[in-house]
Image (cartoon, rainbow over all chains, first blue to last red; front, top):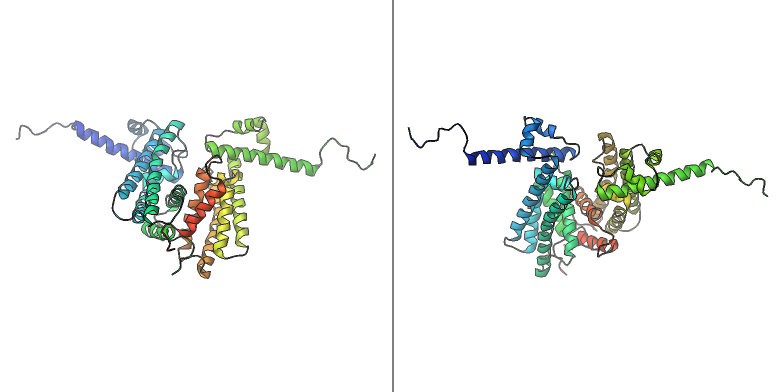
Length: 209
Length: 209
């Protein structure tokens, strides 16, 4: 027998840490699903525990309270959205092409648990200090969109418009997906997004053919 | 002295009814303002009473509870939005012109107390039965927008698009105004709306000049 083999029945520290992270993530994810379905106030940590087949004290081993959970869900959602939009912003192509790619990424993430939680629940139920922190993070996403619009106007791929208002309208239009998308609907998420992109890019007024 | 003159110090029944309506409306309106500022759960009827310089029992003389207030605020908001959009739909002009007018009306109402309450607070905090009723009313607004889009595509003033998805995106984009508009901002509501309409109509992609 290899004398250096690890025969300890206890997990190594780094494995324990990893396991803790996986379990904490599961708590947050299940909570995000419940918040998205029922709203923050109507969700109890008992329900989170039931869905995870554990007791409530086990849930409390990973998080302090419901507010910490919501803060984390929204933070992860915003950071995922921001990272995706930022990555697209640094890729190649015209600003209009990048904007299209950013819309696709944003829509896909906002149909997932944490991204959806940003839009369906958001920071409103949290105390002022937490709201402020999350709004600061949200502004980073807005800035990415705004900067793509400014670039596009400068290079001529995007028509003349007010970048600030356009970025807000775009965020509003995109939030629709997280609010109303149902995985069992007639259209796939990709079909909805492509039809939405067509309208946002072409506009409502008929273009001369 | 005119023998038919009313010298009773008591108000007539119809005047009493009118006065009650005015007061009930004030209760709802102040509550809507507080819900819009702080959220439904963070607002107490004590605060409503304080803002109206009355006692809480006086508030309860006009409404049953906080849920009834929110239901009424959202119902009035939706009905005001629907009536305005429907009226525009029945006016003259191309469907694209009507859609522009409908967007202007919708935006103006969603910057007011009850209209804003539809978007910032909405039916989510209410019990299932009330949520259902209000969602049914909301669908009427969506149908007006959708029908204008269908008309516009048929007559050629609106470019080919998916009317259902376009109506949802439009509602999402418009909801931005109620969420973020501040009366003390740099631009007036009218300026914001006109810049927003320009983007929604022209689209993001540069049009050949």
